[in-house]
Image (cartoon, rainbow, N blue to C red; front, side):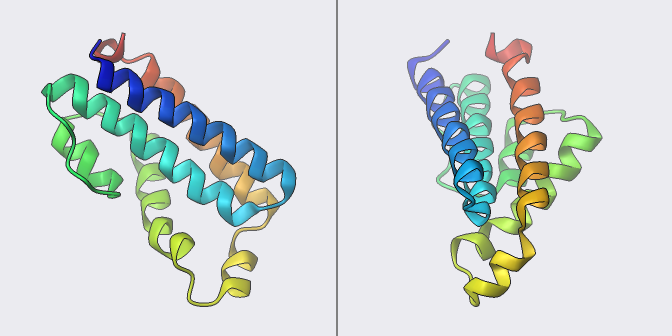
Length: 129
């Protein structure tokens, strides 16, 4: 495995752990934000390993999936699309209180669980072993 691939994986793990801490501290908006970052970095790890090149500087998860030729399970692809759409509003909320209300505890927990599931699937992918 390339060193830069391993670095992306390590960054993803770090962001996932941060998401867990945000959940326990009640910062639910940032759970979603950090989950997106963890997925982004793991997809960049996959892209790097498959293409043997550095990934494009993007936050668009769907773009990374398509460019790497990754065949995600449909349920995973649906979730990646959902969290991808949450990326910009959680980064730059126009109305913080409204955005916080959209991501209460139970939604943040769901995003975290689904992120963990997708990340685990990616880590088990033959191209990352």
